[in-house]
Length: 86
Image 1 (spheres, rainbow, N blue to C red):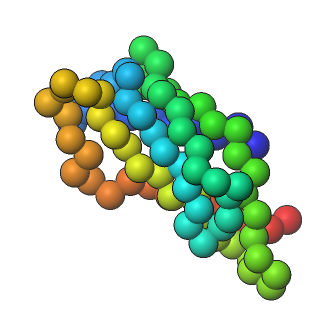
Image 2 (tube, rainbow, N blue to C red):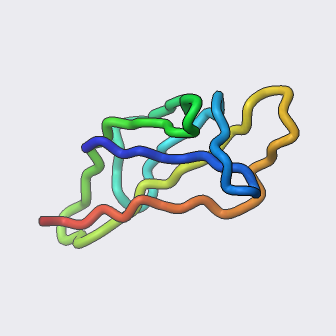
């Protein structure tokens, strides 16, 4: 599935050249995925999370690494992607 993550500054403006890391939460991924935001602050992932046996839902967690040399800092909790079984 294609997932877009948007990095914004405190004023809601997009932040480019930010590294976004997707990793397993309670839903499993095949390793860690990384993407870099474009000029619109968007990082795009192709993710295939899996749920365990008898697991109805789970999450994929995201970490944000601000651009090197910038004054940005990731001080807020980032949203998680909710994965549900069909």
